[in-house]
Image 1 (spheres, one colour):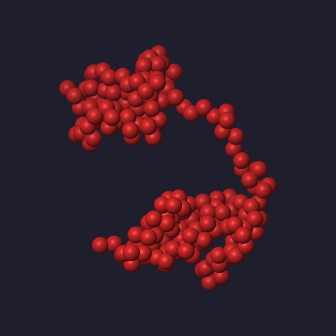
Image 2 (spheres, one colour):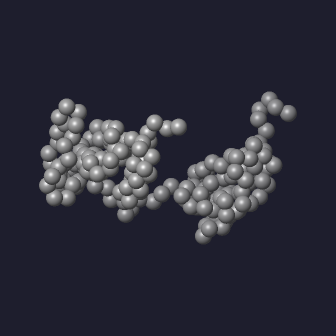
Image 3 (cartoon, rainbow, N blue to C red):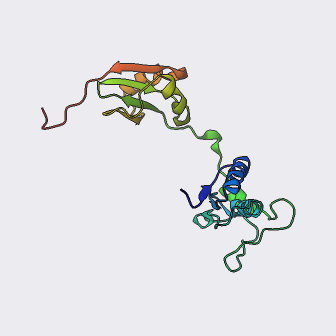
Length: 187
């Protein structure tokens, strides 16, 4: 039986989790990792969730800046929830501009996922990691089969990779039997 819980997610799901912990009379701490903006949001959530009785974990000190015009002030280990409109803080616009990243030009590295079974049957997937969670069960692949593995294979520039890459585009998979490579010194 748990003494309490760690609660995280978006606002809607946090409020749902808060209702469950309140019904069970179990305390929790919020775990919302981010800058001072996230820390302030966590303070607001903690103020309205009756069972948020333990400290919030935001890991705000791992960031170079909190992105706030004024630093968060703690008093006796507590952060008073701002009472001004919105989150009650002012964003440091120069920091936002400084740390802004232009993702419009970033091409993700080419890779495929290789699921190899102990029998030598191999299936290649060209999907993203997120899509793989749907593609894998859809293909009725066994989960946790002894001797199997699912690993990403990066583009090594070879013709062999290019052929696999081409075969798994547009949601297709490539299935084939591959001989296991013998380990040196083993018969």
